[in-house]
Image (tube, rainbow, N blue to C red; front, side, top):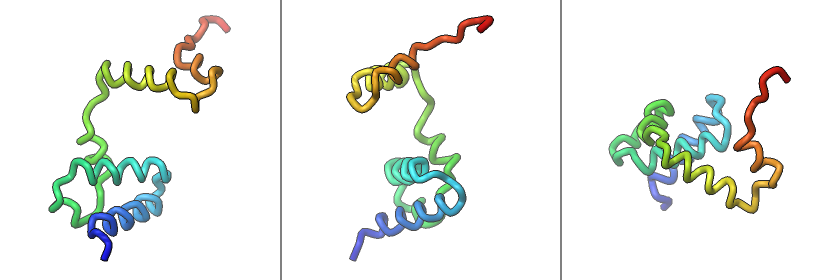
Length: 92
């Protein structure tokens, strides 16, 4: 018999997609719920706004880590890496 948390996660994933969330966002929300929600909170539907808020605020260290991962990733083409540091030129 499958783990009840896996069955719950599958139901929530389907419900989020049916509600209009994209697959990638729905997977992130369910993963965060499984990581941060106490077991007794997994009896009902997910409140995406509450789950996403639980994950915390983005700090300067988070931004630095994401920037480093972006530049180090072989999956990101060089032309896209340059976009991270692009700035808008006034008057153009």
